[in-house]
Length: 146
Image (tube, rainbow, N blue to C red; front, top):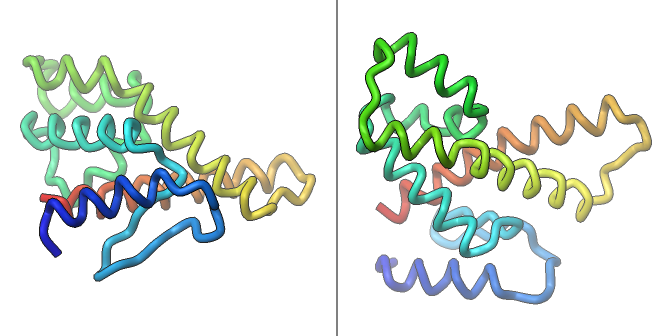
């Protein structure tokens, strides 16, 4: 599948009005339909910036999508001796927005699946698991597009 075809496929799948299928697979490509095209671009830009910063091996990138700004700052201070360049500054500025996008997507997926059992603790555990799963799926989408 060519890059232009993939981008067209992702754009078309995010604009579909029906939400019967939440994950669509085509030639091994995972599309997270709970995330809009604009949010997807924000996440991909974040991942590109993370790659340019050299903070981590990109196979570990999904954990960075789940960090808060405070967590990321601690990581940078510990592993990079507080060194900041334009990429790190950009990561810190967008960190909470990226995390919020993934949390909203996780909650939407669970609401669409009607998995709320009424127990707040189990619902929060389900949100956390789904949040982590979606972060991994976003990295997979980004890797395929490269």
